[in-house]
Length: 120
Image 1: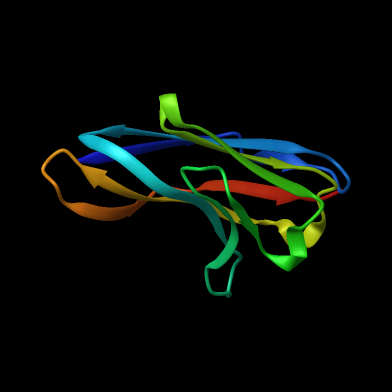
Image 2: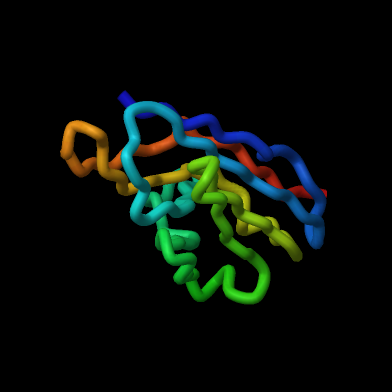
């Protein structure tokens, strides 16, 4: 069983910053790709950013230059630094990880989500 603990969401004014973190724990042998996705009310879940175990990154066009994804492999933790936040960034943010378990199984899981609200 793998668990995720997300933190860092909250209410911020337009132009402000937030830093999300997501720590994975459990019977994990290695984590391949970690990422952040978000879902706004009435919309589908969408990719925000991903990062490989070798720290290669991929961003959605709408967050490029404003958001930075990073990870600490030793702590199985992924971060999302969000700057210059806009009202349209308001959503529930979910972390995701693709990992290998000690049993040899490869799987993927989602965090519970953390609310980010950008409003004046």
